Image 1 (cartoon, rainbow, N blue to C red):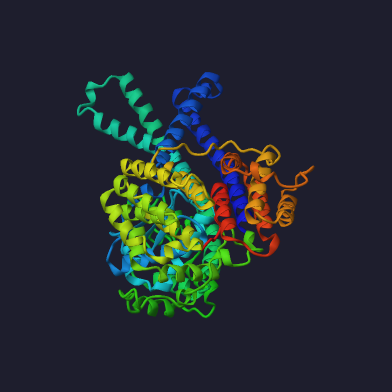
Image 2 (cartoon, rainbow, N blue to C red; image 1 turned 45 degrees about the horizontal axis):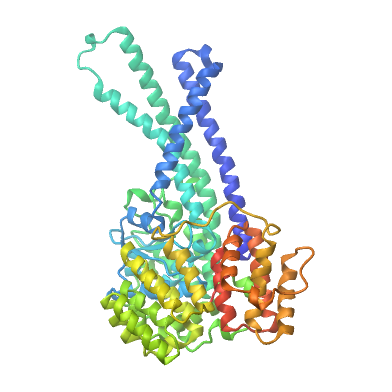
Length: 636
């Protein structure tokens, strides 16, 4: 199943869940009203005024519970990781296990075409587990338990991280957070009942004679209502967990399959599962948040229970292992758990897949006719390529990308002009405006040949985003101002600069609160016909500036994929294909509903691959488009 089909299924599942959740809420409201009417007077069961009050109050409590839970997720994946006791891994960490984890996550990010997410370690958790959280790829985070770092080999860790990246790419993260928020809404009703019961218990007088008969009746009525809310709320939570578990089990199986396809190493993922099955601590967590978020984890985060046949959020672990390794038997799990912990020498831990990736050609030198099949669906070849790229980078580049000011320096270095006179002026200006440590890092990076390879600039930009997110807002504002001045210094906006600005806006300006998120009101592709014309015109003209015949063929190949009637005869004139017009067009296209986004991206790929190859300029423009449409394309 391709990326777009999985996204479509995810939306259908969300719709079905909303229906089931709505039914559960209706049942809860009916039960609450029945209890209140029974306490006051059975005759008032159909009293419109009482029904209206009960419906309003119950809905208010549930919506407040949803709102409070969702508010805890406003910080995205990092906020969720921190609520579970996660510690942000310092990108400059010298701990070998942490560096190995960072390398694996960076390779996965570049291979899949998404920004490198923040990485957290759950230090107090000895169980072997992990999760990915966030609402979009811009605020995603990956968290791994200390037990996973200590007990898993590099290949096993790569399988687990690949499984979590599948959730990032398939839109599972946002659904997971919605499930937790909906669960919190129903749980809020039970908490109100619990608070009411405790309040009555604490306010109870020591001498019963001091209470009059009316007071007794009132306290008894409040006690019954509180007890009913408590019971109804937890019954609602029970059924909500059943829904949560059923949806989660299906997604976990798909994520296992995606991780195997990604790493082409089923034994790595199977090895991690075997260690969980044989390890005394399993995958259970101590954090009290684990109960509400257990559907997010790689493996069951709770202790085994007799209700697991209904409430388990993951398929039975032996079933998952046998799917990956048909020859498995339980004794193998015990042996795997007793195996030597992972080596602390990152140099010895580089996988065969990473070794095969060394020296591979970047996307801009490969044929991409089948690229749409890779959207959100990276292959082992993409991971191999990314592993080789990261491994071959000079140590100074990777260290800079992981440090806030070093990442600023890396981005500056990617923008330096080839013209010696202009480059000298840019360096002089950066000495005056950039932070001192950032300029010192720039002086070390500027001579490195890898930064002049235009085909590798986009992966390096993805690496730098991890460090840039660690800035505070004043630092980012200063960096952004310097960046705009550097881009404008030659009086010309090229495609890499254009793409860089789009990436910064989407993944950093919104993150730091300097820009508003794109609107969520969807539009149809027919309403964005002019914007499609601008996009395909720019794409075909950029790829064939000096060959109008090929530009026309590329444009027509792309337009056919849009399935729109009455198409234009050819692309807009070169003078109309300005990047400011493209900027406005992409902002409009970002509002397309998801099925239409597939058509637009397919049209772009058709235009690019019309001549059987992709140029660096086309790859840069495709990155801007895919990032806008939230359809990650492997661009290593």
